[in-house]
Amino acid sequence: MSPVTRPNSFKLLFLILMLVILAGCTSFASKTEKMADNISRAMLNQDDPEVVRTGAPAYLLLLDGMIEGNPDDRALLMAGARLYSAYAMGLVKDAVRSERLSTKARSYARRALCSTQPAVCEYETKPFRDFAPHIDEIGQADLKALYTYGTSWVGWIQAHSSDWGALADLPKVEHILQRVINLEQEHDRGRAQLYLGVMHTQLPPAMGGKPEVGRAHFEQAIKYSNGRDLMAKVEFARRYARLVFDQPLHDRLLREVLEAQPVEPELTLSNILAQQQAQILLADDYF
Image 1 (cartoon, helix red, strand yellow):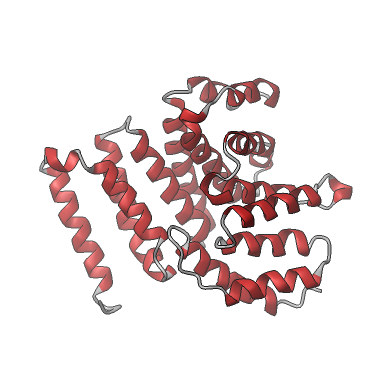
Image 2 (tube, one colour):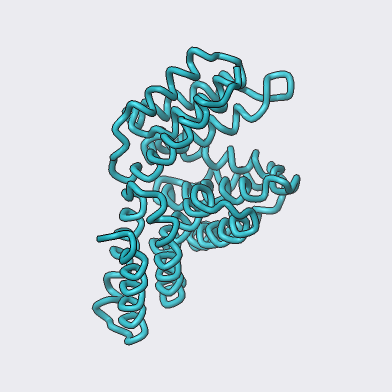
């Protein structure tokens, strides 16, 4: 398919699917969850970020339509949260749009988790000491929803990083991700470890940062993905190696990223973006 016809194909696909939805086809309705999962996988497995950047809005609207018709479907809500968050965090450059999209991602994730854990949303804005015990009560049955809730909240904070009120939520998000790890250390091939690695390396030790704790999380993220999550190595270099001025580690990690084969189920898009960022970081005269 040529680049010229590809956008029109996305529009045609979206139109056909929306007509089926509007027609009220029951056979389609019974397959919406599988379709949402396939859409998610298709985007995450795409090796051309520009295709996703231009085509994703149609997929997001499609998921919105599915959720509108099935507002209590947790699988659809989590798929919507996951894709909106990934799009806002990795592919949208406009700050206002990123804020708006990350807010929708977080809203979908909250609805998915709080359908079975209503106390979480009830205490979400309360002090940490009141909120944390409700996270600690969440078990394996709600692990995926908890993880989606936590990562969508991370994306929301990133998009609202100029808001001190948003940054004040970081301890709550850290606690959520730690709960995920307590339930399943290798969940999502170590991505929860990656998020915690970033959180602990935001500041130098003199200002309250915990770079060595962060390093341990980065190493776990690399381990649980068998080294295939290239973004873990990029963030390890960017957040930890630069913070402690370890240029040999920094350059080694980024060269490994550039030399790696990026195609990997559900990590391909992230890996391509990681390689693009690795090139920029290596060319930057930081040290």
